[in-house]
Image (cartoon, rainbow, N blue to C red):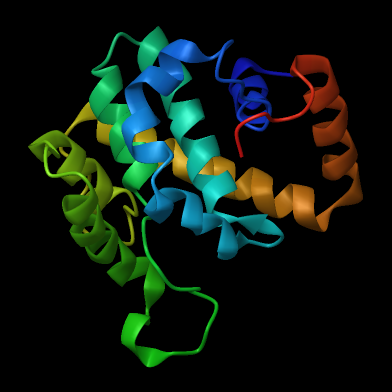
Length: 183
């Protein structure tokens, strides 16, 4: 398995003690009702939005840290990138087409939740759906979140829809850290 996949799998095995540095960056936001409430929404296949957000955030954290980027901005932007309060699978017209509209909804919600959001974090949230959003991310941290979002979404769909990938994922979870202690 590659490092990126291992980081993705570890995002499902996070632990406050072992992953203290990661949680120190997001704790003030992660445990809010707004973020924890994302678990009621389905994101991709059987994966809920909180699991998706956490996977994107942790995968971004590992990549940004290794690449010596602005880890804080990357991670906090990743945490807030899909902060919307509806199920995008519903047929309601007001949020259609979801892929184009939800970055703006997420940014507005992030601003309410986090009064100290930086311009870099705003750009990460607003541009994470590139190339659907025509304007690409301005910062390298935004590119990392965009790529991690696509990577995690792909894994989520494969794990939910293909028995081979589900089995490989469960085996990797056992190898990398067992059960999640925070979600």
